[in-house]
Length: 342
Ligand SMILES: Nc1ncnc2c1ncn2[C@@H]1O[C@H](COP(=O)(O)OP(=O)(O)OP(=O)(O)O)[C@@H](O)[C@H]1O
Image (cartoon, rainbow, N blue to C red; front, side):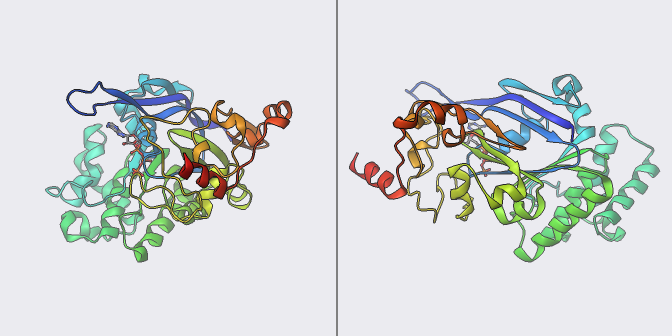
């Protein structure tokens, strides 16, 4: 598969002030990510709250400029495409269908707005296209003249999907598209997204903290930790045989949407690190049950393993071969005890 959207060294930092008399500090929300999104795939992006998923999504959509690195769409720097050029080809579906739809506009006017903004078609053509799209997302055409408040959460998310599709984009970036919905409605929306992908040949970037959802929908998965991708693998391989200790921990946990709440039920014990003060070396090492001596000083390289890749010294053939005697493997309890004693 060829890369449709490609991120190179993608970085986004924010200046954060910590009170009146303290100097502003820099928070690297996304830190040097290389990622190719291939035509027709569903690239799942997972990781704890605060690891940088939404910041990455906003950059891929062209809504937030990177502080370093670049993104290319079909080989062309998205900077040169501009917001409008990007909006024709890459569209978002966000988490909250309550706040993302203008309450004062009718459904038809919400869905057709992108066409109007881009000056596409006559009013009659736009109306027809809007009704067709409502049909495609499973909403009765009579909803066209209703307002968001008259619709349920699931119906509103269908409107948000219709609005994303009305421009015939190639890529849809879905940021937690089912997280705000009732469980009973979530699978309907997921099935709709999958049907639309098949029918329209779409490519999805699918962000979720829900691993079961990602396993169901993604063809490939990128696991993020503190602004970096630490593992990238085909979905089946990732869920069957995760390589990175963090991925392994994620698979045995249920992530909470609360920032800073850490990974519950993993046995790792230690909380999510302060993004303003990330640990040296491998950012995961203080929580890692398999950490080795070099993990606290050397940042792991991203090494390829067949079609997959991982950033972990345990899987770096060069480093493993060169430092066999340095290796000190700690289990989760030892790591926890060390933390308690320090
Ligand atoms: N505008 C901003 N100014 C300062 N810090 C920010 C800003 N936006 C995001 N951050 C910080 O960047 C980091 C990554 O945030 P981001 O929202 O991308 O994470 P996330 O993985 O999407 O989390 P969630 O699942 O909670 O949405 C967090 O530490 C967050 O506090």
